[in-house]
Structure formats: structure tokens, C-alpha cells
Length: 363
Image 1: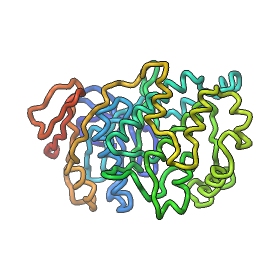
Image 2: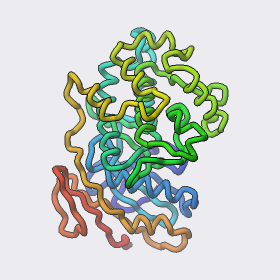
Image 3: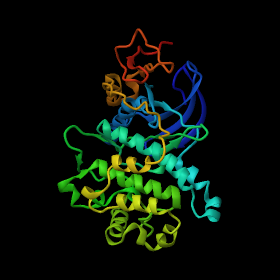
């Protein structure tokens, strides 16, 4: 896979629904980055999600250490390449799964202290997104990555289902992963009255916490394995509205391993009536009660303007119309220094960040 003279290919990281992701070395900085390759021409149905995913990460990532950063969009004759921060530690899913043997002995996949450590960072990132009027709508272990630090920091990624709002956080689209979706998101009636995206993120956060501890989902669709079917959604929803999370048969014994404090928090999260569900701010007060936050306090970043070159790049339909590789670069100096060529800069207690639109590379 070729991106340009500034990048050296390292290895294949994985294949997702929209494209392949590879690890590259950025020769300018010597750092590894993750590059997502989206084959052109891009399907019209994916355009909005792809644009939203990259722009939200570009706007928010540099303001909080627990959100994956988006560095650059590179347009080649065959692919749109999204250059992002590389989280060397893999996904939280793999991290929890590797604890299976330990769980057989101690009963929990992650100890409550370790789960709390990750959950603090996770909540800080979610709260930061909500503060900037962004809801994720697909929070899950698969979309939570780890860096290579000891102990690792988490990185929320994959904002393809995310959405911004201006006046109200009310939304109408049924979207997400069934085992993480809240009852109001699953309910067909929601299509008419809408739902609060922030409450949806809170429910998913509770699922993530519970899976970190017990390694299983309270509400699942075992009878209908394909998560993209209406039957799978219905199976999960019927479980949610018929039994409390702690009364589901396969959870009854496992719940006994949890402390009263954890069960109390989960009882406040898994509330069918979204208006009575605990908020992220209320959870943070509970989780930070007797300890200091691990997350970087440097999380007051100002959202930036949308890069017009990326928008135009997404709308280029024919692979043959572009003979050279063009770039829309998030010109953020990792040392915090300011570029004379920056068109727009901002600072709010964090590093300075600019959009810089560069000329196409010349051969």
C-alpha cells in the first residue's frame, strides 16, 4: 500500500467494514501511525459516515488524550487514506479476553480496581465529547484501544456513528451494536419521538464496565447471532424490558462477585426510563469519590473548523480524475511549536493545533 514518500509501510493491522488499516512510519517524525485505506470511488451511502468519523476525531482528538487523534487525509488515485494515531496496545476487547485464565481463579476478568482505572479514562473522554456536543452512539470494547504505556491509557476511536447537535441532543436514527444499545434506541417507537444520544452513551458505558468485570453481556442475542437483523434487536430489547440486568439467568451467579458499590452504579445506569438514568457527570462524581483521575486534565480543547479539502476529496467520484496525490494535513506540531504557514490556530491550555492545506506532491 502506497501513501507517499513521507510514509513507510510496517504491517497490516486489520480489516473493517469500510476498509483496511495498516501501520506506517511517518518519516518526518519517526512515529508510527495507523492509516485507514478507503477504496475509491467511495459509495455514496458511506460518504457522510466517513467524513463525520474523520472530522470529529480531527476536531476533538487533540483536546483529550483518551480520544484517537486524526492527523491527515491523503487522497491517492485509488484510495482515500485517513492518517490517525496508532494505539500499539490493541483493543480493550483483546485485553479483557486475555484475562480469561485469571478469571477462572479469581472470578473477575479485570479486578474492580483495574476496571475502575480504565473506566475513569473512558468516562473522561465521553464527558469531553458530550461537552463539545458530540455523541458517539457506538461505544464498546472494540472501539476502545490501548496505548503502549505501563499502565496503558485508553483511546476511544471509530466515530462513524457519532453525531453532533446544536440545540437538543434528541436523535432518531437506530444505530449501534445491539448488545450495547439502550432500550429506547432499540424501541421502534423511538423513530417518532427520538432519544437523547447522551443517555445512549451512558447505557453503553455501563455495558463496557460490566464486560470488563464479568466478561459477558447482560443482554445478548444468542438465538439470532447476526447483529444486523431486526430479530437480534428484538431479542435484546425483550430481555431488557422483561428483566433487570442482575436477574438475567446467565448473570445471576456472576453478579455475586461484584461489590455493592459496583452493583449500585450499574443499577443506576441500566434504567429503562432514560430520563431517570444517571448522567455521565453523576457517574464521574461516584467514580472519582475517593481517588484522583488518571486522565489528563488537558481536555478543554476548542473544536476546529472543518477542512474543506477533505470535504472535496470525499466527493471526488472517479479514480482517474486525480493524477497526483493530494493532502489535507492536520498541521499540529507534536512539540507544540507554531507553524508560520498555518491558516488558523487556536490554543486553550493545550498544544496549538492548525489545519494546513498543502500543495499536491510533485514527482
